[in-house]
Image 1: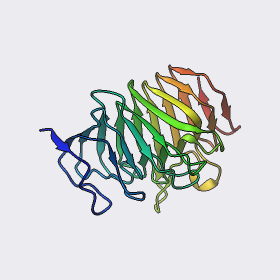
Image 2: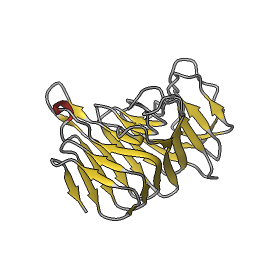
Image 3: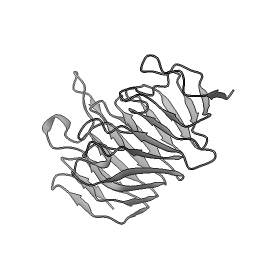
Length: 231
């Protein structure tokens, strides 16, 4: 059952609500507030409205489907750290975020932050037709702007993959960074492109993997010598 959400349940940095929600008005969270959906297998419909927030979904171990029935929604993350979190952020190996709609972007007050971000605990983001990741024109750093993928290892040395699957949609107006220098994160980032368009420069680092089975890249693809590139 779908339930309306009016943006007012914002008391403890997290949102604990029903599993199927639709936004009823443009909503701006206080800077520093995180938009967390507590139910598993959540579906959230932006419904043509805009959301400004610290980040969506960070560190949640569940599947979240983001849709935008009427189109035109803009989800803006406060660019709070250089190379760090954005409008959609994954930092849990069990997190799966499906982006079916909305333009996911960031504020411009912190150059080098990202519209979409994976932390050291990995996770998965899937991008489909109708969704856009927009780096707000930030090309100040190879560390991202549009998308940054880190990943890492657990205390037991298990790999915590950061996986981005692009089935459609657009990535634009900022760099894409797959993997980062440093042995602690070696080989933990995986970008799989099946469709869509990347209108950005792509940097693949430190044994990270970039596989292109479809789609278009109009920017430059730059890879370190120890990375895995399949075109």
